[in-house]
Image (cartoon, rainbow, N blue to C red; front, side, top):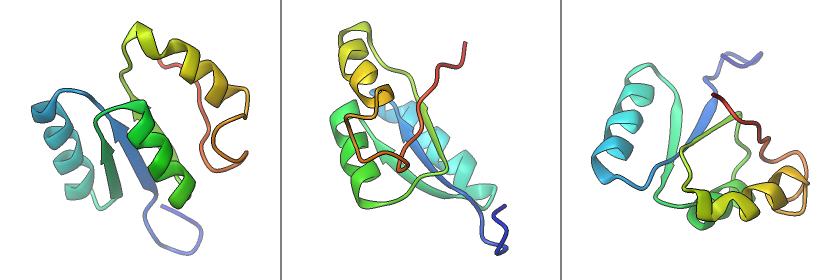
Length: 87
């Protein structure tokens, strides 16, 4: 929960439609505002349009270079999306 009493905003990036729908439902049922994307490009678009508190992503190895660019602050504007691996 944010300091002003609102729930955090979460972006879920998942290429499997069933899992994307499941995660969205889980977080929305818990009261979070959720954006869903099927790939990193769609996720970056959401990040550029809306501030996110958390990005949950399961990305294929082919997108590692894009993820490195995001982590380096090249995409999107710094402060709009933080990136770090969860293992």
